[in-house]
Amino acid sequence: MVATLSAVFGLLIGSFLNVVVHRVPARRSIVSPPSACTNCGSRIRAIDNVPVVSWIALRGRCRHCAAPISMRYPLVEAGTALAFGLVAWWSLAQTTEAPAASRYIELGAYLYLAAVSIALALIDLDTRTLPNRIVLPSYLVAGAALSAAALIAGTPEVLVRAAIGAGILFAAYLLLALIVPRGMGMGDVKLAGVLGLYLAYQGWGQLTVGAFAAFVLGGVFGVALLLARKAKRGSGIPFGPWMIAGAWLGLVVGEPIAGGYLALIGL
Image 1 (spheres, rainbow, N blue to C red):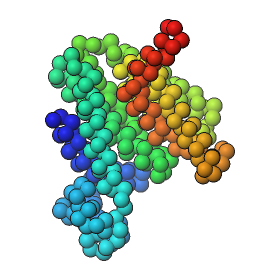
Image 2 (image 1 turned 90 degrees about the vertical axis):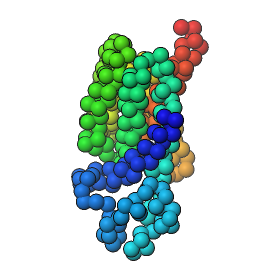
Image 3 (image 1 turned 60 degrees about the vertical axis):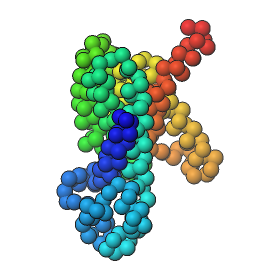
Image 4 (image 1 turned 30 degrees about the vertical axis):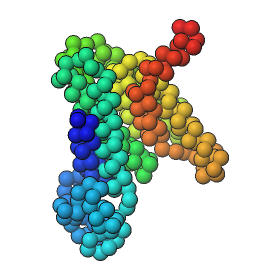
């Protein structure tokens, strides 16, 4: 039931994320003016702004000028709904022994991470930037939500681990940015701290797997581009999406992967 409600909520958030992805890189307000057709400037009516349904009903075209509306809009809305549903199912299954209040606050923290992940991944792919307007507030939101969840659950020690993890990943990416400035930007460094906070909150295994997975996934993608002759040696690729994908991999399956590796080497 919670997963279903989260998915419905995700549809609405997905519609908002489309606005965020379009306006934040341009340094425009995300609340005004109201959404309008990018071709004719006509304001989009409420009935034409229902997630996914309106795009299908309008056959992917503006009601006023018939200009095509990118398929990205319904895909982001549907993708956010799917992501929210899966995150809710996963999050609530992780902490079955914790008080209900703690579990739902944690769920809110991870739903926020899901929304931020989608927005930042798309913005980085579009503009190769990770805006401070999204990344920096995430430290406050994540820190406050995870702190409340841990204190209610009576596990304040995980907050120390989370803070250390955030510092470790931030410092590691900062070092990489100083050594290879063309390969790593400060946006990646700032995002690393947020992801490290979430990963270490779950555990050291999750942090380790999540950190390494970003480079493995990004490396595989880079090699695939070279083989497909879509890129040349030295070509830069947006790394934010791979940091985010690696972090989610670490959160969801980091513990069994880390445990399996340690068992393999006899530790």
